[in-house]
Image (spheres, rainbow, N blue to C red):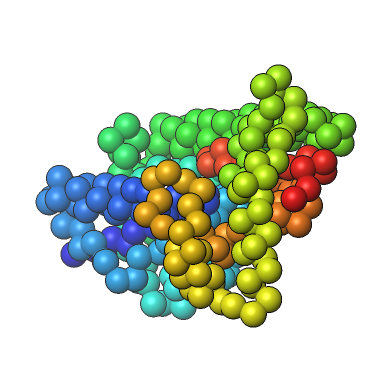
Length: 278
């Protein structure tokens, strides 16, 4: 009865709050249940998980990453030859350019590890008996994954280059802003909400001698309205976010050029023009 090891990867740590991890694990379990003739014994501990790791440049192959550890465990004999690696799709293994990606794939097969993709739209087994058609199928999937990531990377870089140009001219590049700011009617500038700004100043003043919880308690006892109408009072976590927000001390933040971390997440950080000082 071959053991099936599950490899799970998602590009941003924020995705761990969603269902990406659970979905990939369920697909592996369902595949094993749907194919009793293969007698796959799914190993639930360890599960090899790369959380917040991009495969666009092969970062998941590093020795301290899950896929790198899996390969090391095969080489050291912890995982026996003839075992199975269960992945949702081939792009979980690599989104590198085609020659590098195929080498990753072949390195796994050459270790006598069978790779099974468990996605309903990409369910396939690759192993020692794989032929030319399987190799072509693999190459098509890997090339498509890289092309998608490359296109997203270019779009992200172009978008941020445009945003940087606007930011240098003190123009708004996003309407997402701290709660003590509002967008002007013409949409071209931020306006400081003085009532909320005064609360922020008070929080910073309190922070000189008080902790997060004490500040939250003080604001609640002083009946200071929280910024969100949905909030049931001030919480220490909200105090921490305000005190740690660089925008509160006149600092603009702009996403760096690490496009690989943006390929599958579309996560953008806010940018506050320099004239919006509390």
